[in-house]
Structure formats: structure tokens, C-alpha cells
Length: 330
Ligand SMILES: [Mg+2]
Image (cartoon, rainbow, N blue to C red; front, side, top):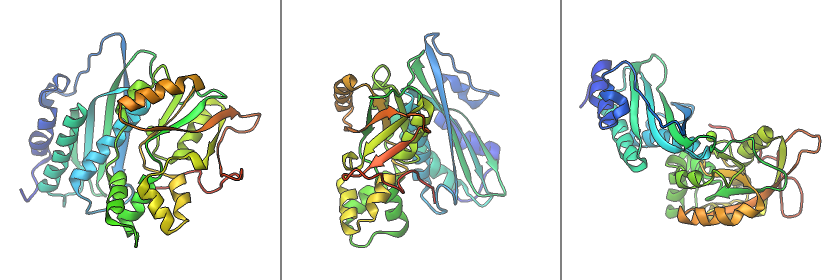
């Protein structure tokens, strides 16, 4: 399948199959798709784009890029407590990108859309003189008024996080430069966590009515918890020693202690950070167990006390840790 077909042919050959069987997409033959929801439900909408050279490197496998694009979008739906429904896709590709690249990209999407129960609602493929841009808008469903916002955190709430933190940031390091001395299984695990995040959809859907605020981890634990603090007008204190790290992350830190701060600053983990009243923690643990995901209490919400709301991380000796506030993509 070398060569490059026209944009019309690309939509017919590659995008239409992704929309097959989803009524709202109307077979991609109409000018727009149509979504009809029961009056009791709200549509939750999110968009994420990936630009070559900014969010990924030239030459990465297209199947993997497709799955990451879908998964980071679904992670945002999870953070809102919504169930994934469908998505639209816009691909802006330079003329040099041939059909076999697109075929591989679409096969990655086909696998994951089956795994997550979503369909293509609409899509476009256009030519660009610039670098490739892969853009997706994902739609989720949630019962009216049940979505989990960032603005509901209350003083004395517990701060919880799903899974383990820091694997995405360490995995980027492994994928980009390699880490001498780190065994293969740990290297593969960390790189996999960076390239192929697991959106916490099951846990996210359990949070309405239990969590007071939630976000997914794309800017790092303290970065995203900071967003919750500012939206809620409260501050947060996280105990560094309680932040759950994977065996692979601990092994990398054992090689070089400087990786601890990289792990704690985190980044593309796509875990959920959320807040909840103390008396909801047991129910959250039970729900998380049903979803086969671990949750850990890592800190607490406190009054902002007249200062700007912020998330602070405190080390075992009580000192405030610097350099863990946020995350920059390469
Ligand atoms: Mg997000």
C-alpha cells in the first residue's frame, strides 16, 4: 500500500470502517454526525492534539500513536466520571506520509476502540505543509449533574491517587535515552507506561457521589493537584513518602537517587488524582478493588488561609520539596 491516495479516498478507505456500526456517524456519508442522548444524560467533551516534534518523535510506530491519542482523551473523560461514547478525529499530514502509515494508524485505533467500546463519529484527513498534527475530540456520557469537577475539594478531604506515579516521566527517559543498568523488564514496563497509558475509566465511573474533585495526571501529580486546588480555592499537602511508586521506578531510583524527584514531579501517567471526604475512602477502596486498580491516600486538603491556593509536597523530615511542581513536555 505504498503511495498516497486522495483525501477523499483516504476518508473512504481508512476512516469509514472505524465508524461502521455506530448509528450516529451515519456511515460518514452526511455533512455531520448526530448524537441523541436521553434527557437524563449529559455529554462530556474533551480534545487533545499531538504534534510531531512536540508530543512525539518522528518515526514512532503509528499504531502506538493512535492508541495514545485515544487513551489520553479517554483519560480526560475518566477524570470527569463519564463513560466513553465516541470520538472525532482530524489528521493533518504532510504529503510525504504514505497510505501505509495511515493504515497502521487506523489499525491501532480499531484495536483500541473495540477495547474501550467507542466508535468514530466523524473524521477528516487533510494535507499540511507543516509537521503532522493528530487531533481527537472524545465524547462521554454521564448522568446529569453527576460529573466530577475540579472545583469541589473541601478542607479535611483526603487526597488520593490511582495506580503508581512517575512511571510516565521515567518511561520517557527510558524511551528517549535509555537508562544504563536498569534491567530489561523494568525498562519495558516504564517505556510502556509512557507510550501506552491505561485510562482509569472503571474507577472514574465509580467516583461520582464519592469524590469531591478529580483530574487525570498529565501535568504531574503536583501540577494537576494544583489545578484542583485553584479551582476549589483550597490548598493540598502531599506526603512524598506516601506517593506510590512502581517496582520499576524504585529500581531506577536505586540506580540514581535523582530520579526520585523526576518520579514525584511526574507527568504523563494518566492516573487519577482526586479528593474525597475521609468517610468515603473505604467505599472508594472497594470500588477501586472492583476495577482492579490500587488507590492510595497521599495527603489532605487544607484551608488556603488567605494565601494563593497551592499543592505542596512535604518530605519525611517535614521540609517542603521544591522542583516537583510541574511537568514540561520535551
Ligand atoms: Mg486532563
